[in-house]
Image (tube, rainbow, N blue to C red):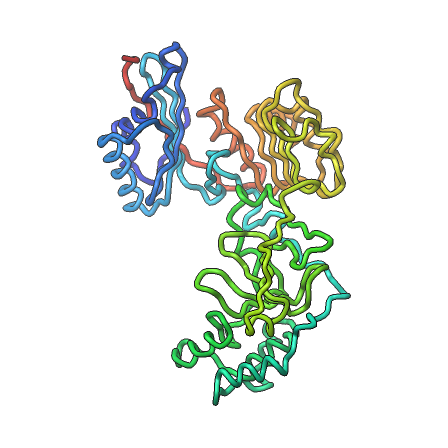
Amino acid sequence: MEDQRPPLSSLDAFGTWEPVLRLMLAGDTERGAARPARVAGRISQYGWSLAHRGSMSSAARLAVVGIQRALARGGVQEVAFRAEVRPDGKTVLGVVWPSPAVEPALGYPDLGVLVLAEDSLPGPWLRRPDPVPAAVPAPSADPELLERTLRERLLGAVGATEEEIAAAEARLGVTLSEELKVLYRVVRVDWREDFETANRAGDAVGCELGGLDDLYAVEAARRHLGWDHGATRAAVTAPDAAVQGLAGSPGWIGFGGNGGDEFAVDLTPGPGGYVGQVILVDHEQTLGAELVADSLTDFVLGRMREGGRERHGDELPAVAEVGTGHLETVQAAAHPALEVLTVKDRPGTPVSLAPVAGLPRLRSLVASPGTLADPLEIAGLTGLEYLEAGAPEWRVLLDAGAVPRTLKAAAVMVRDQDHLPVVALANEILALWDRPPIAQTLIEGDLGPVA
């Protein structure tokens, strides 16, 4: 039985966890039917994820708070746990400790995502902007009108020199739009030294304006929330899109904000956009941006675009789901542009992956346990960077030495029969990439028979 020393020995007492387990077992029907009951959850310093019915008992709440305080004292962000409770009450609890090789995930996979390539990013967050040679500034872009408007609103303002603007271009590695140059020729913004002037400049432009030295390119990596979220997304730009469906671009030059989101001048527009258009990078989104004005001139004059954010990244043919309520067959999903394939629980026989073997862009496969006719067909997916499958499917791949070496991240979907041994399986996968193993403490106890 696996029993690695945990970071916090104070949490290895069964009594600490007993109220939490009793809360989650309330209304349980499995033990009443003479079958083992299984529960799983997470507790962090600031919250918890515990499946239970009704309100939380005072004993359970005190237990959770006690665990949270212990985590805080030990500097541990969170722990995951799983328990198997036999009908007679004999219980085995597995406490899984944080690992530098695991990204916690909400829902499946509840163990977390195994990061096999350190500091790696999913494909969409590595996507560079496509060139659009025919793109030009919008007809409404009018540097002279923009300068005149700003000088009228900011009487006596002193702007940046040509040398300072050139230095900013050299730092960013891009040529700024003429409108953006005009903006900083008129006004110098320094929130650190002259708050009043900077505030006036922001009012004149229409946002919380940053200074010339604060200009930055919106980086894709900064919008990455983790493999659990990113592996099943796709960065796709429609043929008529004004904004490319990217996570970031060296041509998205952030110049201001609205207190949470970022405004940027877009130097790498989509096929239907203009060079120098103004976009909004939503802090609640991880891909794409919203077109708000065709030009900086329009933005300053309040001539905003309406219509909202373009969404073209999570639909056929790039992303496909096979199963109940979605596509009926893998053949229906097969397309040269397919990037993400999900095979969900479905009635009927398991499916073959032969129709998608060798597709050039397929990088992510999520397959519910028991849905694949032959797990070894996964080896035919030559560009796979993310694989999420059941423990039995992983077992087949490991035993055959057929785990794709192109993987950057992986996850094990857990079903009841694979409840506690999943950490050992995950460690086998991590070992193939020489990644640190996951520590799990197994604690035995007795909750007593079903009343």
